Length: 168
Image (cartoon, rainbow, N blue to C red):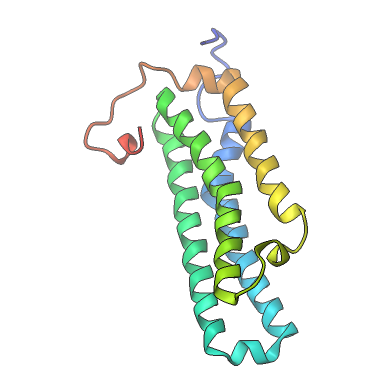
């Protein structure tokens, strides 16, 4: 479905905010959160910081964080560069993977590595609810936005041999 209002075309408004969030804000927050969470755990449990198992946990968490950051940047880049409808579908899938699915994977990894209950690992119910709300809000925006409908159409520019065709 396309709308004729040419003012609502291109990466601007909330769509630009989503792209900036994926390419800059999200990665910065993710790295800062990981650093802060690990530091907080080490300050609360000084003996834990000296254990070999803790080093493995930290390494796994940093790897997961960097993979999530790469997914965010790639999704934002694709939204900004590839104006085909398949890009919106890709972005919606990635929002759910980077949000709720990634939170569950991270909690499960922590629980497995620390031999604990994954639900006990979550600091609050918001740990799992926040990514669901985030993914749902942006999914609704991408599905209902006139700007998105006008910007990403089936006849968008083809980018053969380009990373833009990934995950179609």
